Amino acid sequence: MGLVSIVLPAYNEADNLEACVKSVREIMRGQKYEIIIAEDGSTDGTDKIARALAKRYGNVFHLHHDERLGRGLALKKAFEFARGDVVVYIDVDMATNPRHLLELISYASEYDVVTGSRYLPGSKLKRPFLRKLISIFYNFLVNVLLGCEIRDLQCGFKAFSRKFVKDVISKVCERSWAWDTIVLVVALKSGYKVKEFPVEWEEKKRKKHVISPKRIARDFLLHGKVLLKLFLRFRLGIDVRL
Image 1 (tube, rainbow, N blue to C red):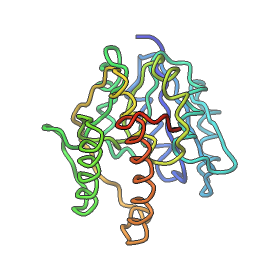
Image 2: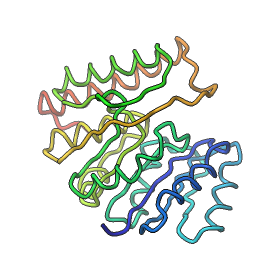
Image 3: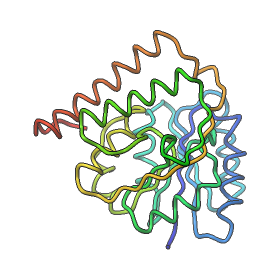
Image 4: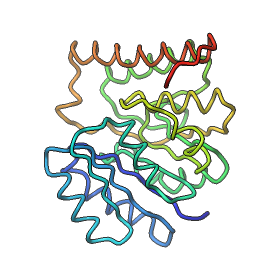
């Protein structure tokens, strides 16, 4: 396999970014790779840490945005910058055990899209019950509405072929966290080869992960809108913008 581009989406990840970069560098030792920090309008000093890491390591690059673009658009711009034959992204908090990284990359030599899964047999998951329940229900709803045989759409641990990045991701306009759902559904519905494999995943404790009725309502509206667009596109044949 040729060059692998590893994208780290980073919004207010000052506590995690340097440890993540060091972990990736250790795992990828002896491999051809680059690390792209997609730093998305952070306000906690993540930008300074990213800039220092890019200066320290010749294969680490920092993409900074003054205003927050959202997960989907920040990833899209990073993928446009990436030079790799395979483009990977992993969440900086390393909720997915980074020991799976080489496994993720190895599958990418055979598949267009590879994603870690928290809900397959063999997966190991540590997550609060309510968040787990909401996540399982969401994945079930997508599968029922759209006929997609995949257990976990939102795991932040994915790899894409260069062709898929060019043909599909470059055309996706979604800016939010629902980007993952759109990308996987389009891949499945368009006949691309998709691989889902079990991973070890542990939720990291953060204030922003606190469940509240307001957040549940916001996420419901956001993902509900995306599911409606996907349903119109793939069930009713209406060409809506994704």
